[in-house]
Image (cartoon, rainbow, N blue to C red; front, side, top):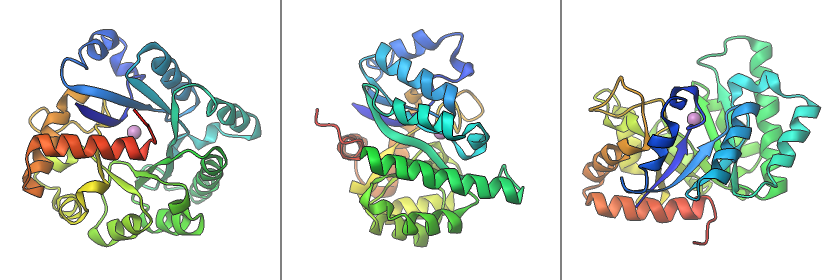
Length: 258
Ligand code: NI
C-alpha cells in the first residue's frame, strides 16, 4: 500500500465528490493519508476528516501565506488542536517568498514559522515544512531552531542537491510529489537521485501539482502510482520497492507504530 504523506482533501475542489474520492482510496492501493492543515479552518476540517475515516490522519498548522490569521488567541487554539486524536504533525509551516514580496509580511512569516516550530518541539510532534523561493532563510531558521531534534519533512522538495544534503544531515525526510514527472524538473530529479532511499516519502499536495500524464487536472492520491514509477526509474528499483520503502519511511516520519 502507498502512504500519502501530504494532501488537502478539505479543499473546496473536493466539495462535490469528496466521499467518492476518499471511498475508493483503499481499493486503489492508497493505505494511509495525512491531511495537512494550511490555515485555521483547514486544520479544523483536517481533524474532522481524520475522525471520519480510519485511514486518514491530520496535521495542524498555518501555511506562511495565511499567518495573518495568527495571534496569541488563535495560536492558543492551534496549540489545543495538537492534543486531538490522530494529530501526527505540525504543518504545513514555513516560508513562501514566491507569493509574498512585502518585507513586513515576510518578517511575520519567519516569526510564526519559529513559533510553530516551538509548538512542535513542546508537543513532540514532527514538522511539515513548506518552503518556496526562500531556501536560505528556511535553512537558517532550521539550523538555529535545531529542527534535527524535532524531525519532520521538507514537503514538495524543490531545491538543489546542496540544500538537500543539509536537511538530510539533520535527519529530515524529503517529500517527493508530482513535479518529479515533469520534463523541466532536472534539479528535483538530481536531488531525488542523490538522497538515500530511506529519506524519501511520497506525497501529492492534492488538489495541486498533478503528475504527468494527468497534469492540468485536479490531483488526488490515485496519481501517486505515477510518482512511484518516476522515482523507481531514477533509483533503478521496482515500483513495489519504492512503495514499500516509502511506506516504512512515512511510518517513521509520523511515528506510527502500526
Ligand atoms: Ni500542501
